Image 1: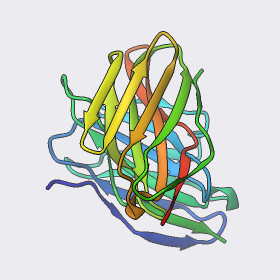
Image 2: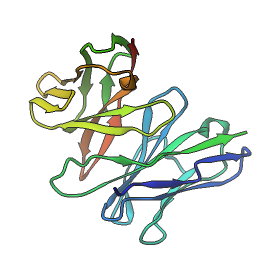
Image 3: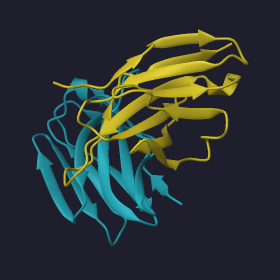
Image 4: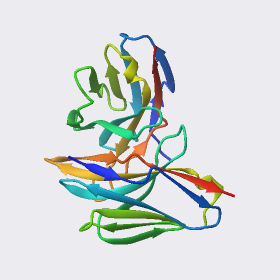
Length: 115
Length: 112
């Protein structure tokens, strides 16, 4: 069964460092998303991406964050100058277009710990 | 903006039935999802409702009333493995694109 894959599964970084989280969405999906979940809290929408551009972003997704689809398979989230409060699980998701439910298929997540 | 409310925690007994409610307010409603999330894992899809009524899928059913901004997830014949958080999520169509916003989740504890 096709799945969304994310790397790394866990990253520890120092405050102020840059982090890149990588995702490989399901191959025939066209919509891509990043969500984050701070420990014990809800899943929060960060950004959606379609047709090689951001389609929606939340107030969380400020200039510290950027997304890119550098090739036909990868979808990356870059966090510049990480802060302690960026520590969270970051989930990538993808969905298919068309009359389907638009169900989000989530990756297993990348746990980011900022020290 | 969007607002999604669901109970924080619920407890039920193995073999019983439990109903998890969700109310929502959104400007451009375009469907409601229920996801299951075990601790430390990714959310997994359970159900989708876009029209009023009940959708049944095995032991799980989901109901939607758009006029009331209300949905529930019904779990029957509860099993210990059903202990998890259940996330209500709403697709909000804004401008030309939509996004799926999650509620805080209901943590369900199953007792033997």
